[in-house]
Image (tube, rainbow, N blue to C red):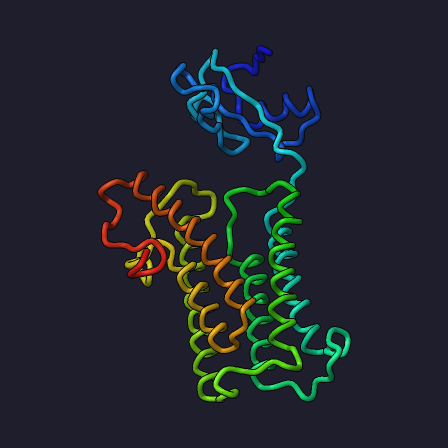
Length: 293
């Protein structure tokens, strides 16, 4: 229906109106402009009306008489909450197979091998890093996400954690090269180096915009001079080194599943940055996996 919010109405006023009329919390509301031309078609979504609650609708391109389309995003949950739960699971699940083998295997396992011990340390350290980054480093462009994502994301991480740990810590597990220490140390040292690179990239991305700033900026420095998403590059290569150190089929399945998704995200970001900045965006940057992509 027609709504008169008054001159100088804000995003918050629009959301408050819908909250009073229909009971939808702010985080459940999505507003878009109605497509202006017939050629856009009914399947074409209008521009998203996105801004802080105090921003005026007029500053976001909404004029008197415009038609806005409302969508209920459903029950929401905070991004940080989802990330902490999805990372806490693998951090707890993986060492269970290492610490309590009798609970999971019919065969008796003797003292754990060095590969199993270091793999457990690396895995737990990796997810501890992710949790600390979630709490102290990352800034999220959206405060919430649909609550169904909690089940989806946790299922992915928790299931892979159990599968990888089950086979790495199995009594019949045989480490690569007979557990050669030099080989194991080299692989996990490189894995840690790539994780350090991933952390540096995350800090640089966080510092790219000052608190309160929005919009895209071109990252500069470090690996960003050569790759659009070097944080994903380091993440993938870190898991590759872990896989070379442990070498089970589920290790590689986990890495490939994650690498595929990160490549999809990286290609999307690469296209957005090129579209936003045009010729100003460096043409020689790879997307995520030089020299292949």
